Image (cartoon, rainbow, N blue to C red; front, side, top):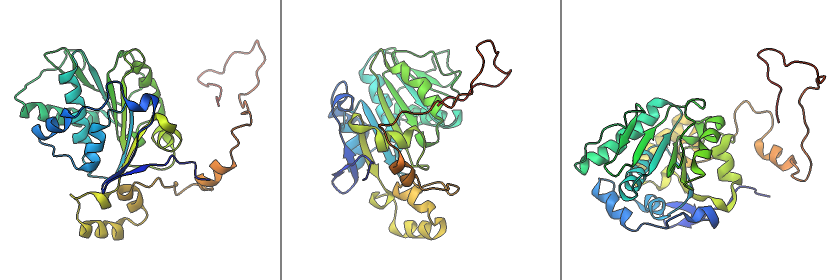
Length: 287
């Protein structure tokens, strides 16, 4: 049985599945966002248009390298901040440098509109808008990225490589404002929140898959060269396939098929007398 969530075709370019509930978005589709995208320099192809028009509150973009996800993230964030006063948009990625690169994309779009924005004076990588909206680019540090609230949009770039604890620390910031989440990445194995949200997240998520073979900006000749040079990595980097790790003893599909959701989980925490103190520097293992 295939436990991966199915997707439905978007003509010629991508696969997308809108879901009910959170997946339908808080404000619905914004038809004007396509015109806005073209105004700031991105003429969206059908797959990119599917993302922009989705109005999704929970979205996953599983795309190949050089698809344009960073530019798309900048369009989504800048449009949100310009059209909704007091919005807070957070960029998260595997490193501060990568988050700052997203912020540079957003600043470039604003420059096209003739807007020169400053930082918020608190966060080193940030932009503050005249209507009091903000974009903040975060380092990949779970301990220091807590404290944000009423987030309007969380964009996680290269989500497959962002640690689970960092993502889980950011999600509570969406609670009050019922903010949107976009996970954008090329796959990196069958592990982590990006893979599990894609495969097992259910109908809460709007999914778009766009392999390089459907990208009009990448030539077939280049892809054939990459196929010869990368071997099985080509399927991950360009075809959006979630591949098993090379050091795995068992294929993930076998492991998933062996799991029984009706069985209780075991508690493997070590037994200690009630009067015993935890060993210094060692935390009990949790399930």
